[in-house]
Image (tube, rainbow over all chains, first blue to last red; front, side, top):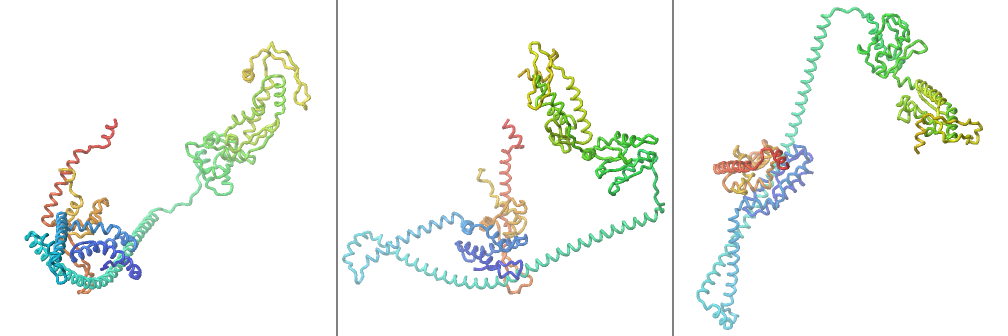
Length: 495
Length: 125
C-alpha cells in the first residue's frame, strides 16, 4: 500500500529512520482500510485523509522537540485502535436503517438460496436420466408433486437461481478487473509518494535551517541593542563626570579636624580604629582632653558595635584618669551589648566581649572544705540532721544555681566546670566567678559556726564517739536547747 | 426535552468551527484543543467518522486540494488535503443546535445553587 509519510529532522539520517516509521504508519492504515466495506475510491479517500492527519501531527510533535520515532508512535497511538476506527467509519457511512435493510436482504437471499437448492435437488431427482431409474422415482415424484402449481413455481425458482449464478460470475469478473486497476494505481501512487517524500524532506530541512538562522539573527539583534544601550549609558556617565569636574573647584588637601565635642571625638576615634586591619586592630590616642588614654580594640567582634549618639560617651570636659574612662565606657551602653572595658597593666584600655574576658581569665582552683566536712560528720555522730548529699555537694549546687548559672557545663555552659573530690571542690571558672565562690564558701563557714540546734528534754545526753576508724578526734557532746528546729531537722522528723 | 435530547457536543463544536470558514481535519482538531485550552480533544478516532457522518447527512461538504512543494515538477502529484465547509443545511442545523444547547443549559442552571459552598454549609447546619 501507499506510504506517503516523509518527514526528516535530518535528511542525512532519513534512510535509517524512514522505513520503520513508514512501516508502522502504513501498517496501521492498511489495517483500517482492510476492515472498511466501502468502494475502493472511498477507501482511498479515507486513507489519504488519515495519512494527512498522521503526517501533520508527526511534524508538529517533531517541531515541539520529539524525536521522529517518538512522534510517529504518539501520532499513531492517538489515532487509537484500527478496528474501532473502522467500525465507527462504517457506522458513519451506513446509517442504521440501511444496515438493517441490508441484513434483512442477506437473510432473505440466504433463505431463497436454500429453497433454490432444495428445488434443484428435487428437480434433478425427478428428471429421468439415461442411466437412472425413473420408474422407481416417479411414484415418489408424482406423489410429492401432486400439486401442479407448486411444480411450476419450483421450475421458475430454479431458473431464477441460474440467473443469479450468472450475475455473481459477472460481478466476480468485474471485481478481478477492479483489483487489477487498483494494483496499477497503487504502483503509480507509490512512485509519486517517493518523489513527494524526498521533496518534503528537503522542505523540512530548509525550514529548520531558516528557523535557526532567524533565531541567530534575533539573538544578534538583541546583543546589538544591548551593546548600544550600554554605550549610551557610558557616554552619559562620562559627560556627567566631565561636567561635574568642570563645575567643581579644586579641593584643598584634607586635614584632620578634631570634633569639638570630646565624646564624639572618642567615638570617632573608635570608629577609625575599627577600620584598621592591623593585628591589634588599632592603638589609638584620643585627640581630646583624654590624651593619656590609649583605646585598644582586642578583636574583630567589636566591629559589630554601632557607636552612635544613642550610646555616646558623656565625657566631662576635664582631664580623665584611665579608671574614670573605663567606668564611663562601661556605664554608657557597652555592657548591654555584652562588652566590657578594662584597664590593662600597660596603661591601655581594652574593650572586649564579656565572654572573651571570661575565657581569658579562666583558672582552676581547688577549694579545701575539709573543715566543713568534719563539722558535718560531727553533726551526724551527735544525731543531728545533716543536709542531703552532704554540705560540700550542697555548696556545689548553690554555686551552679547562683553564680552565673549559664556558665557551668552542668547547665549546658562552656566556661565553668565544678566537681567534688573527697572534701574539696575543684572549680574551673573565670576570675570573677572565683570571687563569688570564695564569698559563698566564707558565708557558709561563718554560718556553720553559728549553728544552733534544739534541746529536747526527753532526750538523754549522749557521748558521741567517732565512727570512722582513722578519726581519733574527740567530739564534745552537744547539748540540745529548745530553739526552733532547722528545716533539715523538720524533714528528718517527718520520716 | 429529555435528558438524552441534550445536544451532542462533538457535532456542535465541528459545526461551529466550520461556520467560521473552511477547515481540514487536523486543523479542526488543533483549534478545538487550543480554544478549550486542551480540555476538549477531538480525537481522530471520533473526528473523522463524525465528519463522514455529517458529510453524508449533507450538513458539510468537502473538496480535495492537492498540495505541491514550490519546487515540485509541474506534472508531479502532491499530497491531498480534504477541506470541509458548512452547507446551508448545516447552517440551519447549527442554529438549531445552538438554540437547543442554550435551552439545555438554561434547564440545568435552574437546578444549580448560586453558591455551592453556602449551600453545603446550610445543608450541614
